[in-house]
Image (tube, rainbow, N blue to C red; front, side, top):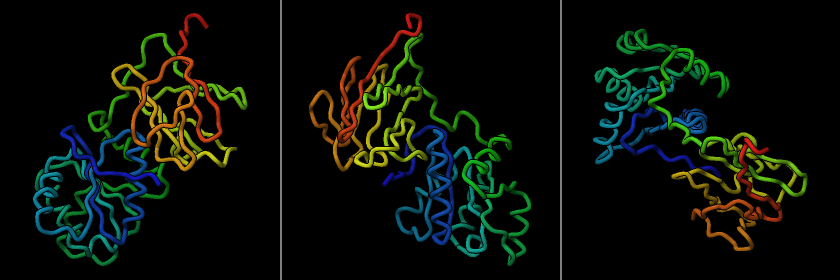
Length: 253
């Protein structure tokens, strides 16, 4: 399972507020934002005690506050409080509407009249709506670390002769098309999100994502969660799926 953790760094980020009843919808939104490179911190209802100060600080300092809006949300104390904090701090606020609330207090109605809204129907359409609204600026997103000029990184799949280009800073490999950039659909021994190749300080590295059947580099089984540097010609085994890591000079192709 792909575990999403709230962003806790110091760069600009999106804060998402939701009530427990809307958790499934909210985490789908969070997953889509994170998948597209956005830094996201999310809050949950029922937090009290020491966490309250952190919640307030995170909402007051976010670059964008997304409130998951529903009938349940407008009746949830924490959801209303999160909206109040964001608006009092003059944050950019957008309500992502999963259902149209019918019973609103006068105060809540006045607040929501000031907040732009986007409907949540599908993940892609909700994200496009936010982009068209102009609230998803580049400061909220991790910039892709540039590949070296004229150099191309790829995986050669020996079984099919397919060449998979590694064009992003993080390239997930596995069966789950919704998450992975390098998709292996026809091998059930490969995990849904088996491994990842990412670029760090100009070096490509391979990490096993706690896969069931393991990831091997030049015959050595990798310890899950530990990054290993890659070199041209390295042989990678995802379960029984054989691949070769390649670095190619485009000008000489």
